Image 1 (tube, rainbow, N blue to C red):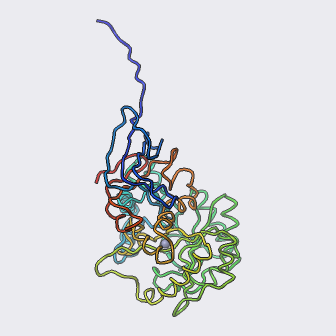
Image 2: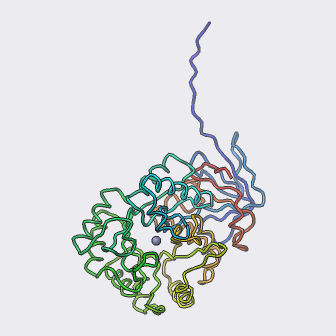
Image 3: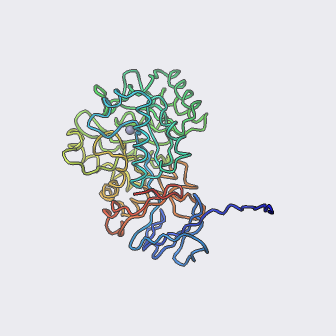
Length: 404
Ligand SMILES: [Zn+2]
């Protein structure tokens, strides 16, 4: 007998996906007859005239459009999109909550959402899901804020510890930075989800918001403010927030028109606004009546902000209600169109622009060589028919095809 030493050179398997159309994340026109080649977790070539490399596995998605996986800038993995997610969460210990969060994240990925930013958990559990995702290709890429910073008894106080005063806020930012969060989230005003909370009133003053921004930036962390009340928005801008969530300009019984100086500051300071778009059609479920009545004025404000050039992304608040399932961002497109975006601009706001806002623009949000192979394939043409986005043919998360 002879012994033979075999040297195995590991070759990653190439996959070539063919489809009818491709939206690259930015370009307003679809690329016809694309071939996209991926190697492991990375896209290596994309084009109409790309040859299929020798030995590549060919996946033929005839009639489909390839898009970058969707990027949601504001989700809550901790909430389960039930009728009363706050009570449901109160009944779960951390292990049970973690399990719910993981399946919520997995459902997002199955629905084509390959990157999510969690803007409020309990006990830093989203950081654990973020870690799990690095070894589990059925989970989307996750960024996480940890528990939101809020006042004693304030909006979402049940998610964590309170922070009062300038020193308290600074300490809260420091704690989060040391835990390894990706972003700081502060509740600058009250919110709708918390009984007794008043969205139309600020929770923090300018001094506390300034301290929060200063401390976050000392740690090189971005900071975003949940802000409904006009005063909270004004103070947040003066404090130098990097981004805002909601930005509804809610008053006790209505909505303030966006003040001209606020509009100018939003553009001048190049802040990103996470628009709370996306409403899934769920029988019997709707927005709270108070919000429904305010919608026309909120839409008018949002149209003005968009026309002025405010940088908008989708921050759906997935998880907080039945109309906000894990993959609700697919229903954001018609709402963005209602504000004046084209379908391509709306898809851009849910892919490349969102990835840039999340500081992931060098590897997420585009179908380009060198980018992560996060791909949503749908039947039909989502530029001429946004409902095509729901006819999912395939989802690839960092190069792995999810089973459907
Ligand atoms: Zn939220």
